[in-house]
Image 1 (spheres, rainbow, N blue to C red):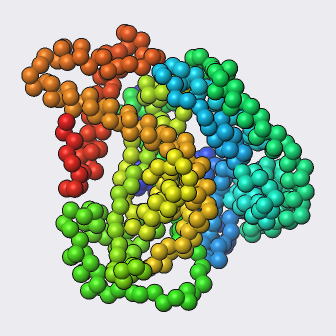
Image 2 (image 1 turned 90 degrees about the vertical axis):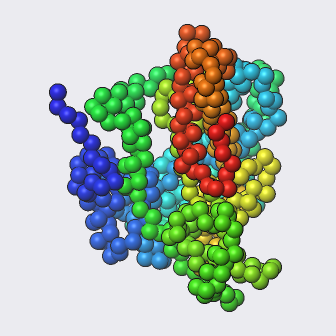
Length: 500
């Protein structure tokens, strides 16, 4: 049997990546390098959607190929961006469907409610999510801005409709014809209102239990399981297999365009601290303050400013102020077995397996705090670090970054599924940690067989059969062990110990 070799994606050279990933198009591809040469620039902003599509991909709206889509920004950065254009009407439909629904008394009925709502969601959408070039996606936003107060605030133009009101040129943003966009809206306005009215009707019917769906649409992930088994048998650790896609994306994307917007000089003078001011500020912070937690050369994970650059004068007190705040970056669960164990009949829902810890500055944390105040039922997880990064319009040392406040409010409202997934992740994490720490404590004075009997009572999932419960308990405890290791990794002196 021939050995199956995988490159180390963090360190493999460009030709190796191109040979192993012929269906991808990262910063390492010959086409990307040719684009940089043709546009006469080195800075590159290439996102995961671009990297995850072949070199011959063509935008379904403007019909341009990648070398025709790439363009220079005013700051001289080559922009290689594809966006997933989706119907915001579907988001509004989801909010209507969930509004007024009561929490069900058990998991089976909660799953049945989820299934009913999932079946109704697509009925409110006018088009499937579609991968388009960033210029076509931006044209949708530009047209809606031009028609503010005319179109429904959650309306999105369909790909075929965007094609009608854009003027296309190679390596340039699209021009938008607002008159044609208005005409398109008038053609579909009645349909939009009708779909939203239908969602109201379906929400009432679902609340009355008239569309409950028992069971699950679960189908085994044969291909994913096969890939995991083959690679694991070939000597590649299971975790490496599960993180393979993330490793490829990390090696493929490039974000030189972040915070590169050309800003007009501010009329207001900015107070610039000295290194002595920074030293005095650092000395004034308590030794257990989070300011001391990140590495000394830490830069904010959102705005990319250094400690010195984020130091600014408080407009109220006139004192220098700054801060470091810990944020979690969540990693999606990709293991089919874990998805089944976690979600049962509703295994298709967004599910997080783990998190990494990053640090952001006080000003970027305030963006999340402000967004949280813009709507009901928003949590501290209403915006991710990536969301904050995307919302930033201008970043300048020693003053608060400028960002799109309206877009932040919309993004926070639209992240309801993410917030629910994080809440579920935290509940799962706490449950597994409790089992792990309780077991470790009980083993000091009890037999393992007795502990197994006691802890089996904690296995309550309806989709877990009696014979499967011991194996499921072992899986939960192993998850708890993994989460305990994460706790140890993330611990800072200010944290309370979680030794149970």
